[in-house]
Length: 266
Image (tube, rainbow, N blue to C red; front, side):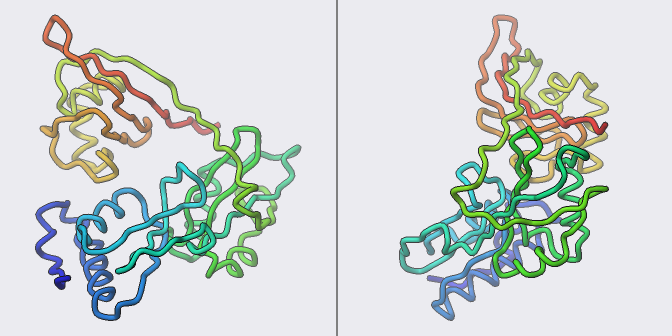
């Protein structure tokens, strides 16, 4: 296995992602020099994409986020294959105990509390709900004491974090909807304009403000063409999975998609 040079991977990603590339290049080089497996923090899909590009086929990559469809996952890198159990990823699932009869909490409140508690956002994973008031999230087991001692209030609610097992992890609410849209072009600005009912000019302004993501990476060029299985994100609107694309007789495109629309705050 050859030592990696971070600059080799710069052209594949946005300039803002270079610190991440630098970090993961160093991580991979550490693996091949020390011959010791590495367990990362919770990584979102964009960071995992960068890591996999750097590693290539020169290391085994396994990942887990606490449940089957997790978005943020811890990644295990090793030179030899290791059969891992969920416990090996050092993930602690928590249920948030709070007086549900008297107060409500939401995703933004949980995320805000965790993100502002003085720790890095890579130290915790997904925040999930069953849609009926039950909330859970996943944290690095190495920081369990911190989470349990420091997180005692979310918004206006007094809370207690209750450690649970993987068997007790809830089935997350799927609040997506299936939609079909006819768009003039598969350019990202045209697709987002058709779906969000905003003008292409407005979408261009949002791209310039780094409010648009494609497969979890910031979009800086409105000429990018969208294809099946791409995931688009438009800040303050929602997330879109492109499921199927077909041409119409009039030269336009029929796009079948799944939309997770951003919930308006009460």
